[in-house]
Image 1: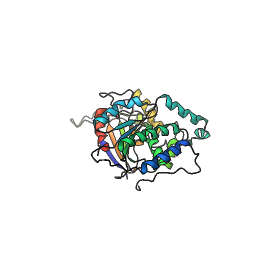
Image 2 (image 1 turned 135 degrees about the vertical axis):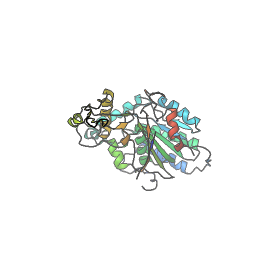
Image 3 (image 1 turned 90 degrees about the horizontal axis):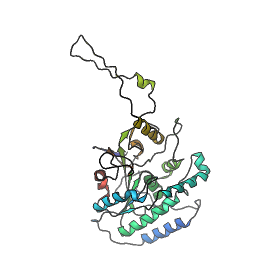
Image 4 (image 1 turned 30 degrees about the vertical axis):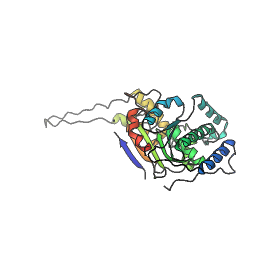
Amino acid sequence: MSLAITCPSLPSPFSPAKLTKSRRPCCFCSAISEAESQSSSKVTAFTSSTNRPAIILPGLGNNTKDYDRLALILKEYGVPTVVLKVSRIDWLRNAAGLIDPNYWRGALRPRPVLDWYFRKMFEAISEANEMAQGGALSLIGHSAGGWLARVYMQEFGLSNISLLLTLGTPHLPAPKGLPGVVDQTRGLLDYVKKNCPKAVYTPELRYVCVAGRYIQGARLFRSNDDDAEMAVNIEQANPEIAIVNTSKPPSPTIRARFVGQGYKQVCGQADVWGDGVVPEISAHLEGALNISLEGVYHSPVGSDDVTRPWYGSPQVVEQWIQHLLH
């Protein structure tokens, strides 16, 4: 059973996975194996008064600078922070998946297509481990960064990670067989669901999934059933006169219809709440501590602190920062 919290305005942690002979060996995997064996032999005191270092994992299309302000906010709370070094151009490397037959079958696997991201994760985690001096780490995955973190943990082990906090991450694959719904990840989220360990919320490893409720989507076209629905209101002030209001509810805005089509591609439904990109129901995981925040937008790009705050805006960070503090 998952824990769920709406905020207004499994087994114990899994063991580090080992690369099997069936996987294609690479120098990247060897480097991780060697580094982890060295870090396991290092025993350094980490005082309880020091907050765990955090690594911010950018979402699809975002770059490092998009999270500069969030990193500063976290440091003001006393959380040492490393932002994964990624540029917008780096995401074009995902086009390598086009030559994989599994892409066209909708059965794409994260590796080797996303190895470039995992290398950068390894570098950022190594930097954070230097800060932690043998202590635990927190991962903050924004959007796709959240499920990429889950793949990394499954492939290469925990690396002293004790918290995975996801912000607007689409964790669940799109439902199959629905007309007009195309799996935009081409099977990647199916892989995550089938192969990554279930979410847990234990003292050793905590999953915290934060979803935003910024705008409710709407279906593109009103159905016949919708047209038949009318608001009926009978005034009883004069028993001889009944006033019936047969007015139709207001039509959804063009924006709500547009956003709804985006939601539908992610969860199969258009008329649900979400952060403008990811539906609320897709950003939660069974077994995790699930939190919904009202009025929170998906991306740092195009956001502002007044009319469109995102997960990293000061007043929003205030609602989830406690999970990073000792």
